Image (cartoon, rainbow, N blue to C red; front, side, top):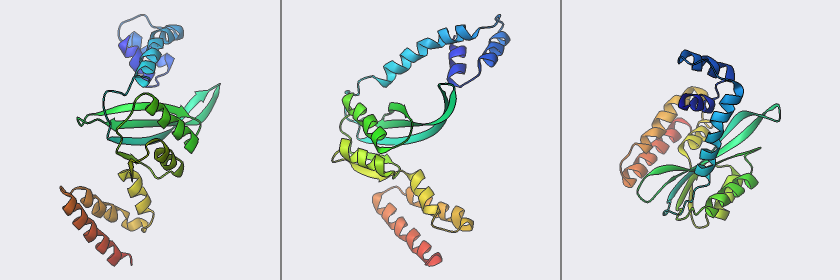
Length: 203
């Protein structure tokens, strides 16, 4: 059952699940049997996504969205899967919530963040995300008083669009040295050095 459920989560087709079951020495399995076995997963997921978040503060929260292709009503469509990851006061990281929407607009983000608050999310001091304006507005509304920072991946992507393609690997390597420093003072000093070098090469 665990193998069938994992195959279902990974998106393996019913026919291939049948082949997999046969390779394990069983007689095979029908589509309805796969559905029945995997129905229990829905309850596990619902329980996980609806669990209370009132066990303490989550000072740091990361927000991100992925575009996924899914089947809805017999059609193949693009949807946005939004994910919130938090770090609690003990330094432990966990997935706080996830939701699926038609698009990554401000209204969807606002509803998602409010649902996290309703489940007890509190103590947020810093939110890291991309610079999507609708998302930034939702963060300011729901987590009033929290600081915001653009995530490194999106920052690097935006930065590299400002330099010629041939120089992007070198620029990326230089910028990464800033994140490798061990103290705030070293970070600022290295950032100044990198900026000076970039200004010299790209005045």
